[in-house]
Image: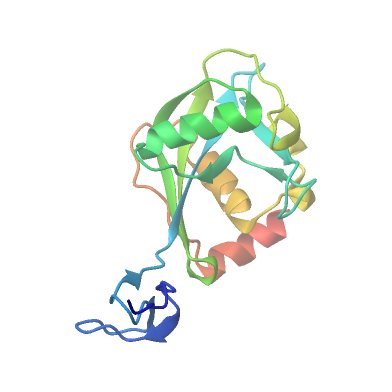
Length: 189
């Protein structure tokens, strides 16, 4: 009886037949381990205030950017819709129940292989609290947002797009801002 060495799985980088880019594959069985972008879903969540809606932000309890403020957002799970994922993330991070209104933005972040879908939503009740991934959760008026303490550029972008669409019921989702828009926003901070 001959003893065969066990398969080691995907361990060689090569261009598979019929493909045009290098992938990680198993030389024993030909299995290709595709690494595709991750989808992040989240929401700009509001609650009505005296004359001005408040925006729900979460202070991160995890890396990256622990201690910085962000929108309730995170990676989609298998077998869920984008809206269900955004609602789940709001519950996990802020113990918030939300109703989604519209898709606000789709951001491409190729340097970290992400696509981010950010919705416009509202709290269905004023109850919220920090979930396991948050140190704190709070509602902010526009002029109270801690702009210098926001965790990621896409949080800035989504907040700006939300603010620009207040009162609009129909609009196309935003995409990555142009360099000109970014420069204008910098002067507004």
